[in-house]
Image (cartoon, rainbow, N blue to C red; front, side, top):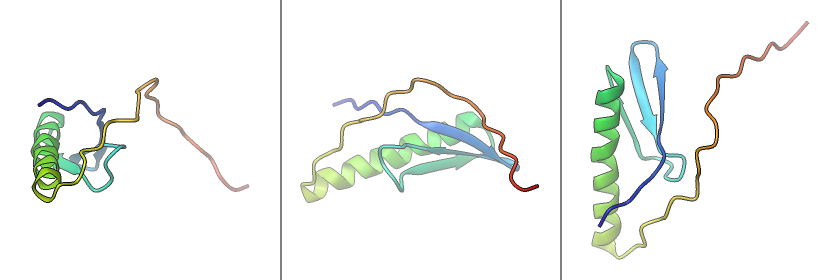
Length: 77
């Protein structure tokens, strides 16, 4: 069975972090985007395997990627 989830990859200092908005707590990290994506793929497989093992339903993605942007906010006087 195949599952499709949008992922977000961000860079924090020297590492890249990947997460799935639909599945809080499922994330990956790596020194490159590719490594972070590979790590989250492993984490997602483990999550789905755990859901199956205990009989929990596997959540479907409710998210649809419509835009990706960076926001700069200035606060204060």
